[in-house]
Length: 146
Image 1 (tube, helix red, strand yellow):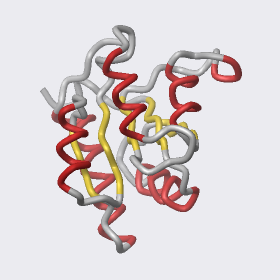
Image 2 (image 1 turned 135 degrees about the vertical axis):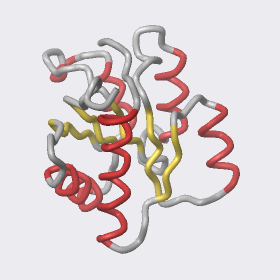
Image 3 (image 1 turned 180 degrees about the vertical axis):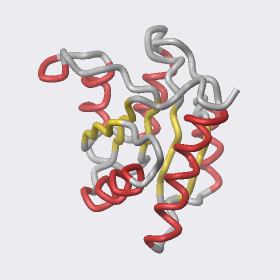
């Protein structure tokens, strides 16, 4: 089954530009890097996913990497909106956040996150985690058709 569902586009939803840059760099190091798109908060994420305004021509992502702690709209709120939207709910969402708090983990899975990953603190481990997420969703998992 390997290679059936290559990730073409990944949407990173994170208000920390340094974390976004590290994710982009980690994904550049994989054998078939996806195109990485990024937004800085939950409202922008929903505009992107619904192709509103300046995001009208953006491609539907194959995977969303979602931080929880963001201004204007939290990752929990974004996750709930995505999974309640019939047009968006099939997009895999990996919560990638600094929180290891049990309530955040439980709430994320209760809201139908596909995975919950705590951001490692050191750069090498962070990049390895991102590459493992990419490998799972591009080499092992079979993704829904767009």
